[in-house]
Image (cartoon, rainbow, N blue to C red; front, side, top):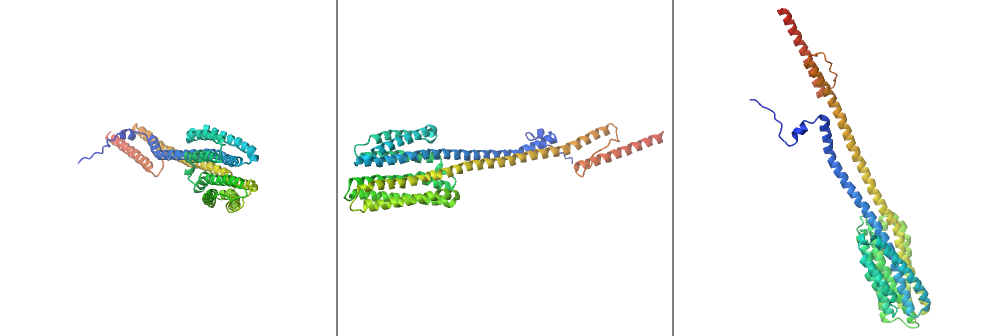
Amino acid sequence: MESTMRRPHLPGFSAISNMNIANKLGLIVAVMAIPIIALLAVQFFAQRETQQQAAKERDGLEYISTVIPFLREVQLHRGLALRVLAGDVNSVETMKQSERAAENALAAINEMDSRYGARFGTKDLVAFLNQEWATVKASTSSAETANAAHTRLIQEGIFPLLSTVATRSELVLDPDLDTRAVIAALTESLPRLTESLSLIRATGTETLLTRANLTATDAQKMFLSAQLAIATEYAESLDRQLQVAMSENRTFNDTLDPAVRRAGTARSTFFDMTRNQVLISGNLSNTAAEGFFYMGGSAIDTSNQLLAAAQETLNRQFDQRAADARQQFYMFGGAAVAGVALALLLAVVISMSITRPVRHLAEVADRISLGELDARIDVESDNEIGRLAESLRRMQTSLRAAIERLRQRRQQAA
């Protein structure tokens, strides 16, 4: 039975089978490089996403650090406005200074909005701030009107702006637990804590001024007690979140711990003053209003200092994360490029180790076919090519012997 070996009829097989060895090895290297290139692409996009998120978070933190001063000035302006409406003429000039400071802070927010408003979706909220701030400045008819206007600006404008920036900048989605805990504390608990402290300061000061030699009304006591409970709850939440961050990250502990202690001491002192001088006292004194207002401001300011204490560390965290992503990409990329280059080098070396002796043997075979039976075979190895060279040598010997026998027979026949 006759058997024949046929090449499989596959698309492209004939072209591949007809390629020389160097090209075949190059094709193998190219095919092997495909998954490496794919992994590099995945690594590149992951690295770029990390860098973009870090940059976005940094921009969001910058935006938030601009909103907090405006919140502080609006809270201060409310307290001063209520003092003026309660008859404290000495606070008129201070209120005007606070008004100018608030307008400067609002201008900084408008500048931030011009840079990041389209990306973070804050244009409508910033427009609301500008509109309501004009309303706040005009709300001088009564304490109730002034308090309501300031509170509306804060509750419906500033707080939603902080929440929107924190969400759109992906600050609240930070991958690190310590960083995420600090961000939650600074964008959620801290602003609401300072708002409760501000309401206590404003209402308590107004009560001391308007109820001199009397006691606080039941409505005033109820409101202040409620705000004390709210402030205590937000203070505890703030401390819990910061303790998580400080326990996870030594750098946060070093920068935040002193500020946390100062803020806690100032709040505790202010809470005690509220209870003793306003809620419990049976004989309120308007001379205590100045000290009470100052202590409330100290509690608010020391709490807000937590943002400044954390901001530099947070920015370093964002920058380090982006730098680590770049370094990791360069490391993987360098290893991948080196691997592909090594594979190409090996392919060239292997190709030369095969094609050079094969070309030499082909040349020798051609010379033998033309009768040059003494052609030298310069191949010495223990592999398949060496065995092929040895076979050619035996063929040379056999041909020479056959020709010699043929020559002798002809001589004998002659």
